[in-house]
Length: 335
Image 1 (cartoon, rainbow, N blue to C red):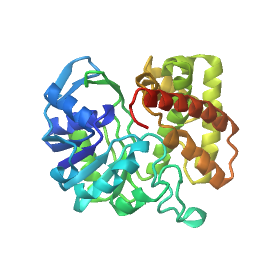
Image 2: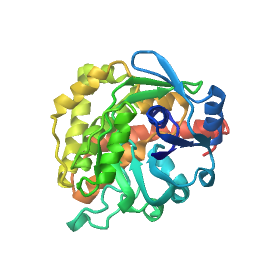
Image 3: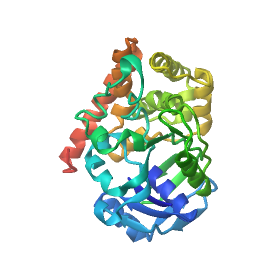
Image 4: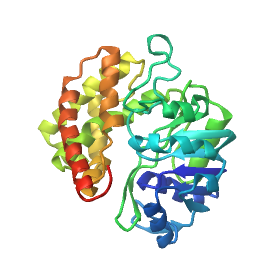
C-alpha cells in the first residue's frame, strides 16, 4: 500500500517506521523543523520496548502535500487541535478509493456523524468549530482506530516505544469491509496487533477513559501513570472522572467491556511512564484538552449528564494550558 502519514510525532513516526519496514511505501508529512530533523537522522529511528534501536528511511518526508499526492491510506496522526490547520490539504492525499484512518487521542470530531435519532447531524463544537474537517474529509472515507501504544519523542528526534502494540480498527457503521481488513493487515505486517471491531466508538471511550482522567492529573502534578494510579487520593479522583465519563458515553449508546478498577489497574501496569500531556507541558507545547476533556463536557451538555469533577479538573488544566501558551508567546514560538 501507498500510505501517507500526516504528523510525524511519536505515534506517527512509530507507525511510519513499522509500515515502511513492513514493505509499504510511506510518505511522512509534517512541519519544516520535524521534516529536517528526520532528514538529519537519515530516517526514522525507534528505540523499541527491548531498548534496541532500529531505523528505516521513509519513501518520502516532506511538508508538501501536492508533492506527496494520492495514497491508498491516509493516517491522520497529528494532535486533535492541529487537525483544522491541515484539513484543507488532506484531499490532495486522497484518490477515488483512499481510506482515512484517524488515531487521535480522546473523542474524534466525527463521533456524532452517522448516529441516529436525537444526535443526528450534531457536531462537537470544540473539535470542528467551523465544519472544516467535515467538509474536507468525507465521513464515508473514515475508518476509526484506537492507538494503545505508549511512545515518546526524544529531543534529537528518536522515538522511544515504551509499551503496547494494539491498533484496533473499525468502520463508523460497524460493518466490516474489505478496506478495513486491508488496513488491519497492513498494521499486522508492520509488527503491530490489529483487529477489525464492530463498535469502534465504545473502544474509543475505553482508551479515552484513561486519557481524559490520568493525562490532566499528570500535567497538573508531574506524576507518572503508575504514581497517579497507586496513590489512593488520585486513584479515587481518576475513578470519579471515569464514572462521570461513563455516564456520558452510555447516554450516547457506548458500552464498556472493562470495569473502572480494571481500566485503572491496566494504566498502573504501564509503569513510570509520563503521559503525552505531561510531555507536552515539559516541552512547552499546547495541551490536548479539547479532544480529551472539553469534547466530553460538550457531550455531557448534549446528553444532559452531570460531570462536576471533570469540569473542575478541566478548569485547572485549562489554566495550566493558558500559562503554557503565554510562555510560548513570550519565547516567540507563535500563538
